[in-house]
Image (cartoon, rainbow, N blue to C red; front, top):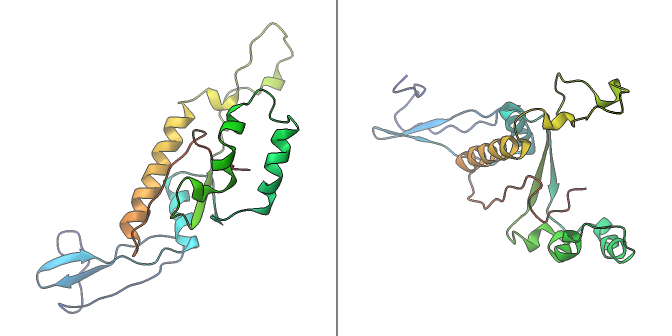
Length: 178
C-alpha cells in the first residue's frame, strides 16, 4: 500500500468495481501518480451511501412531469391551500422539478426519523402543560439534514463518472415532495 492507497498488480492497472451496498475507492496508477477511478452511480450505491451518512431511508424517482401534479392547480383553485399562499406563488416551479434544475434526471429523496427520548405529547393529559413536537427537542433539523444532504451530494459528485448539477432542499424550496 502506498500513501493509503491499495497496492496494484501492475503499474498501469485499471480496475473498476461495483460494490454491492457501499462505495469503494478504486485506484489506478499512471506512472508514479495515483488517481481515483470514477464510475457510474447506481441506485443501490446512492441509497447505501445515504444510509451510511445517517438517513433512515432513501428513494430515487425520475425527474418528470408526474400525472398526479395535474391536480395541483385544481387543488389550489378550490382553496385547499388555506393560508399557505406560498404554494400558489411557487405553483409553476412545483409542477416539475426541471423548472428549478433543467438538467435534472433523477430526484433523490431522503427521510430521517425524529424519534427522541423525550415524552410523547399524548403521554401527558395535563392541559396546562405545553407540548413540544418531538423533532424540535434536538438540534434544528434544517441544519442537520442540510449538512447530511450536502455531504451526500459531495460524495456522489466525487465518485460519479459524469459531472452533474444538484440542488439541496430541506423544507426550503419549491419542490412538491408528496
